Amino acid sequence: MRREASIAHVDLDAMFAAVEQRDKVSLRGRPVIVGGVAGRGVVATASYEARRFGARSAMPTAEARRRCPSGTAFLAPRFAAYRKTSEVVMALLAEVSPLIEQVSIDEAYVDLAAAGRHDLSLPGVTALADEIRAAIAAATGGVTASVGVGTSKLVAKIGSDLHKPDGLTVAPPGGEQALLHPLPVTRLPGVGPATAERLRRSGLHTIGDLARVPLPDLIDWFGRAHGAGLHRLARADDDRPIVGEREAKSVSAEETFDVDLTDRVRLNAELDLLATRVGGRLRAGGLSARTITIKVRHYDFTTITRAATRAQPTDDPRQVAQAARRLLAEVDTSAGVRLLGVGVTTLAGFVQDDLFATITDSELGQSAEPGKPSHPGKPSHPGKPSHPGKPSHPGEPSQPTERGRPSHPGQPAEPGQPGEPVEFQPASTSVALRPAVVSDWRPGQDVRHHDHGPGWVWGSGRGRVTVRFEGPTTPPGPVRTFPSDDPALQPADPPEWR
DNA sequence: TCTGGGGTCCTAGGACCC
DNA sequence: TCTGGGGTCCTAGGACCC
Image (cartoon, rainbow, N blue to C red; front, side, top):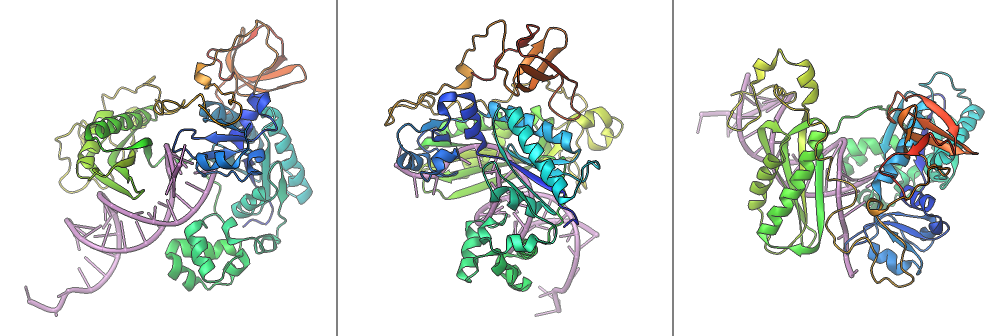
């Protein structure tokens, strides 16, 4: 816990739905559900209009359909559009502070102290947070953010949730417990259904109740780590640092089928598909993995995992698929499989070793091909294999991951729902007919300037458009502002929005 | 038409080593 | 032939988060 309220938590409000409403005028003011629209889908995000009818994240879409009125839009996610909006926001936050921690596509912590130039008094951080919120709404074309500011991650996070949507909460130093203790335990990060139920059975409902439980009891109930964590958080005792970059620890892909599968041939084919996705993402990330895990969800929702660890890491989809098939062969699937997943862990980097570790290669041997028992004892650390001859897979199959799921045939059009048909077209099939002169620039949009080359729209408004001419990652590239109708500025292909 | 998909972290037991 | 103790790796499952 810091002495000043210098940690901000920024949370975009119902982001997926907000982006859809931004990009399609007819959706504004209407209930919008984004998520799986096929048979077994669940809600990813419900707009605030839809929440009024009881729609919630993680609710089966079928349930949301029951609750929401006709005229509600049910949309499949457009992750590319959300990612672009996210990048606009994160780049903006990176200008506020050199230390930000992106938690997810729509959430980040900002270390206001790390910039060294902000006024950290209460009025100071309040004004700064308001500036941030205004800048986000302007830069994203109206996607709003809620912000919490406090002396710790915990308080900032709870604060951002307190006055959603489009809200700001600044928790003054010293007032942390007063803020926390009246709230239900379920507001604490780390308290999910199981923990909440266990606490309820002991008559504990508020964070204040939890703060009075002796540590040994909590450790008894929840184990060492979780128990001690709850004990501290309930007392607002939180000094978790803001962590800028994190390395991925696992890569996985899974798929729930419209109908349960029993056919082994079909199951193996699905496994191959998943392994291809995982392998592709490993290669795209310059990673390899030693442990392959499959996940099987049976017809009755019971779920098992099976894992195998190789002597050498691989990024080869065929190797991943082979391991996965061997694991699946040991599982009884005769009663029906609802979901199949393939994941990899024990990740190691390839690319950097190629660049920097050429001399020490001899110590580790030459390749990851099978049949090398490697070391009799144990290579004290499995990571950092070296792949002398490894091609770096520059433009690899460009992840079959996103851009909508190829399966679920009847997905896009929203067949036969009550009420008027929902206007929806997947982004990949839309065609934007652009005039030579463009004035409705959208944040995140890829553009090309006749003199400056490729870039993307940072913000627009009042007849002007601001463009960045490098990637959205830090350090930011040069920014230039043009008249909105500058003919030298054109949308890059393909258009990202419709 | 009950319950997605991609992650992280933790626990617990067994194998194995010193 | 009364057999401790610690550390690491691996596997399986579970809780939780967005």
